[in-house]
View (tube, rainbow, N blue to C red):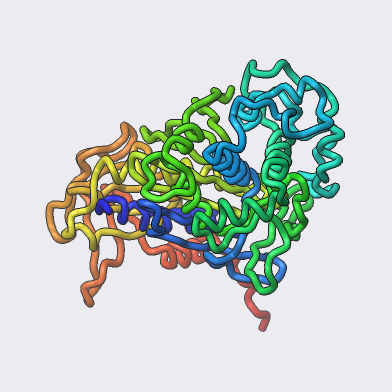
Length: 461
């Protein structure tokens, strides 16, 4: 493993824990893999706010639409076994569909280009107001024609991936959960993943949570309802480690995988552009794009009370999975921040050993700032930001406790001095960046209390 990656993973953990604290989210778990092996795994916050149960990396989450990648992998596996072709019509295997739906190919369904309804007439299954649809209910809704002309654009469809589950059952003559667990989940070496609820007794499970508003407080969402026929679209339950491991196996350059290289290339290539403000595409059961100069593929997931994101960077052989357990979870934004952090470390390189004792977090009344060694310099990160090193000040160290700002944004203190203060025991007590004095968080907290806290009324005599 390249040295910069280990340093980046360390800072990702520090930054993510800070982000959770200041955003007051319930909890988050993250796993980072390199060449298919977990190199970092962390859990912050709570699995259940009502019981104050602490979150651990072993807690399972609803990973929602990540399930689509498992289902797509199952179809590609069946294609390798010559049991189906991607250009077969879905109606060749499933009866009772509207002719316009039945005519769509398996590849069109897997790439969300079949024009199918997203969630049918009532998507209440995704807001916990009704049970997830049964197979009969899905098929009844797909007796109607496609919502738009097929093969004209990307149009996301959970109903389409419910069909994928029914397709797998039709081809294998087994229940979807049974076949996918044996042939994909177990074959991939995943021990903390199941295709649906319920979990085995005693398995740690993170509960979902509502937003803080409009009720004024967060409520616990049980999150243990079965996904029924929507398993293949949204039913999977897993840890971040297993999720990252599985997606890493889908990279064409992965050393081990449940799929052939050809199948992985077909899954991860960019079949359809996703119309949106950023450049992104969809393959077969996975999304793909470019961020921070990294080509990536992966998926996101949203289940009532949960938001999650996974990205694999094939060129670096790195996979990242972030699972958050609230309906307003910041996993999508935190993934962007992780890619930004990795890019910054990759650009600057691992820190020189002589700079390590400059590492640390300091506070002013305005904000926290992180001194982060990279390469031959110190970068000043802002952990409050989703991109903590955007326009970062850079410090060249010139002595044991001295430095100079050699790069800075226009409104910062370019060219000025940096110095550290020590007490009689030789411990660093505070740091000066030009004229700005930063101290440990507890010290600044006490100063804020002294200056601005409400004075206690004096006892009458």
